[in-house]
Length: 290
Length: 330
Image (cartoon, rainbow over all chains, first blue to last red; front, side, top):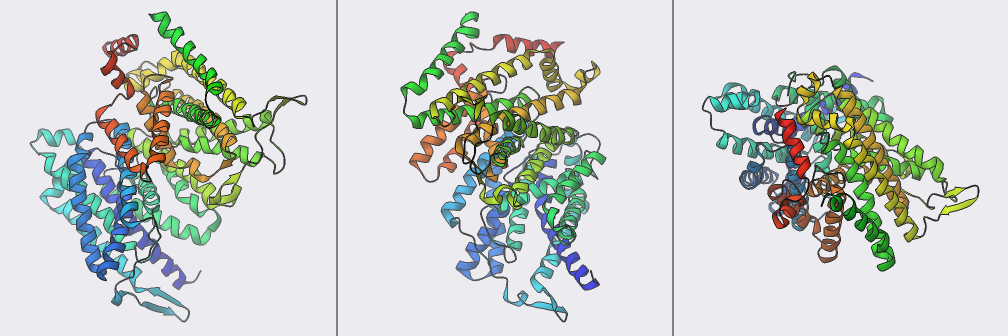
């Protein structure tokens, strides 16, 4: 493998990892702060992509699709938290799993009613649609590069909010020890609502961002849900840094696995997960007890 | 009263179940077979969920794996022998449960859910993405397994009636096996670990080994259900292993109640009956089913028993609740 090919694959791995991070960070935050496992998280990745398709084809603007899709997901997130998710606080995991499974069934059919079940594609914005010539016979699409930059920017923003702001401090404290934080007088009602909505919006954003480079199809949420679980198990739950580490590891494993071991590439990430479970059952950056 | 609860009611139900195929059209006999098969799967799952306190999301994988073993073991123009294909299918499911369980049981709570879900999906992708047994298209099983001894056909599974009665026998055997397990010292230790892991551990119970044993038995029984399902439909597809099936079976367990052996069978009947009615009346039956699932989780946390208790008064499982109460006060 020459350097150019290696570089291209590395870029692919990072771009894939960054998208995984957007989805997994929301999932891990929702679990860390709200103590709720939300299986419907992947569904919002799928809904984001369909919203991007719907808005982009009717208005012709990808940017409008991006803003509109994220806004709709955020509002739906607030609504769902208010109606359903808040009733799950403190309930056992079985109730959380099954309620979110019920949500998946409902949201899937709503998607079917609104958008149908066809496979779609979304056009990338005009000025990002070209590609960069690397060597004589190799080029790299500008849009993929733009995803890398954009996701890095979002990731930096997430890290800034979590590490440097008062809200972030509360979120970190909540993920560390919910009871203690509450005992210190922090009210979680508002925090919960916005963490959930932001998590949903991040998943939808990821779906919107990848819609021009991947096909938009009904099952895309399921695959992403499983991948983000693997990311969280590998990285350690409730930790944004863990999600970032896990996402990059999975991105690298999957991308280079397809290059070097194409026949077993689909199982490689699970082998990685199994190895992490043997080595550190609570994830690489996870604490001893959950 | 105790006699009626323990023996009379089950005997009457069994009698009704045996009589059923002689009273209704073939379509409903096949539907009843389906309910019993999913009931076996749900009861198997409940051994780890209800009695072990472990929410497993990969039981569809054990279910589908056994089905695929039958599909692969069946030659194109001949039936497979039941005596070799059945133990093989159940054995493969049990082995998969051993490997996945040994890894997943290193974790707790929500991690366990995510890990089992991920490993289950790994097996799904194994059949979906590779050319093994038809890939994403699935594979046909042209002949139902052959139950013969010395050239004499004992059971002709092609006949819906015989198939139904065979499945019924497996159902009764499953209930007997699980009841025995739950009431044995092993079952008590498993439930003790569910109620208070730290205390059970300090009493010297080998928690990991107990849970792994339960997980493997549960996976093997799920394999029995998968084998029967594949035989019934004559077809296997990767979707059989998908986590939507696992979640649906979890719903059956919740509807039937987590604290009884045969409850999930009732859950299977209720959910499959609901699906049957919804599918015939609307294209968007999943939407309604989803809303029903959400409503059950929010309003009936104890499943149908809660509903029955509300209607008829809390008649059943007094002793069980008392036992749980005692366990808490030890």
